Image 1 (cartoon, rainbow, N blue to C red):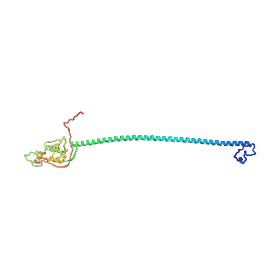
Image 2 (tube, helix red, strand yellow; image 1 turned 60 degrees about the horizontal axis):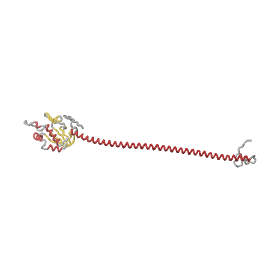
Image 3 (cartoon, rainbow, N blue to C red; image 1 turned 90 degrees about the vertical axis):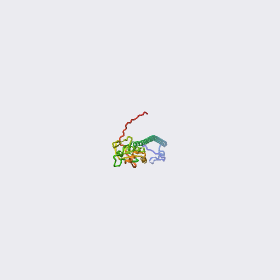
Length: 289
């Protein structure tokens, strides 16, 4: 006999609308089969609950796994964030340390610059003072031209054309001592620089006569003699006009017609000494400290 699968749905009908075995009165041993069906139905109901429990358990298991993974992800994210924050903090600390070091170096450089600037200013001040002193010494030594207020004097031979045989011709010409007398008078009147016919007077200047020639700084000169002197022009003019000065020269001016006069005052330029400066009879003395 071929077996047929039965479906019990509680309506009393089986497959294809046939009466169910559990309700069909013509089915033999219907009591036993009905019990089996009830047992099977109970098992199916019991299996459904088991499956529900299993599915519920599996769902819970997946939920726990998901929660664990999520918490692990959160932990990893938190750890990564903490690591990133720690790295940022270390970078900030390093930059702050570098900034502090740079500020310290800048402060040291500023202090060094200030000290060097002060030293340079002091050096420049010292150099300026030395420059002024050197310029003064050069001016006094006559090695540089000098320009300033002063006076120009003309000293010349006599303009007399005829000299009597009884007269001494030397009375009608300028002599070296007369030049020295005028220069000494100008020095005494406060002159700071003097030149005669372009020859600057310095400590080593010599004025002497060789025959009828006057040598100044070993340079041959001839009349007229232009004497330039820088200084107080009024004071030098007053010294020249004083009757107690240059008496012999002034007498020759009156008697023999020598020329002695101030031809101009104002800004005068005295040339530099262009000769050689030789130190004669000079020893260098050394002293122990």
